[in-house]
Image (cartoon, rainbow over all chains, first blue to last red; front, side, top):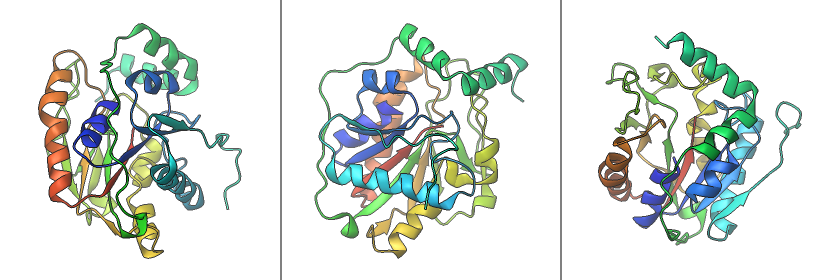
Length: 85
Length: 169
């Protein structure tokens, strides 16, 4: 995914992506990333958990607004333990 | 249908996150120099935001991603943003998409983005979403880099996208 992200950014469109694997992301180096310690298949959290998904989207949008080049932002949510909204 | 080996691997990677780190440490990645950087040009409330996923989502009835090729599938599918979730399917044997099958927003947060637009947090939602299947290896990496990723970038420019949010599997 990082390769697609880099191509889009290189075309002049700012991008932010979720990563569930910090090792891969540190090597591929996308312009902006939000890292979650969530299982694969759950980049936006759990099914039908609107508050959780909205919080993660807000983290992505804020990262678009504020991140420095190469930043990997970590909100620190604990899978199924963090209480959203 | 996913092979048994695939299904076992999917569950192992899901339950043992450190396995993915081990896999990543042994694998070679395309590590190109430099960091592409495009700053946000206007406040998000005035920006059209588009979505890209690499979770293998496509419109039901559209050509599925190729799961037989061990090197994956470097092609992409276009999903009109107004497509109802009931008309989307996931073709991807390398992750457990049970949750995303129930709620597509788990891998493609289109409803959440619409809510952000309704709330005035973003200015608009791009007219099309773009979907890859994430697993791309061997010679297909070059196709992704040279052909499909630039094509998606060009279409995003046509769409008037001011920013892109990307979600993996």
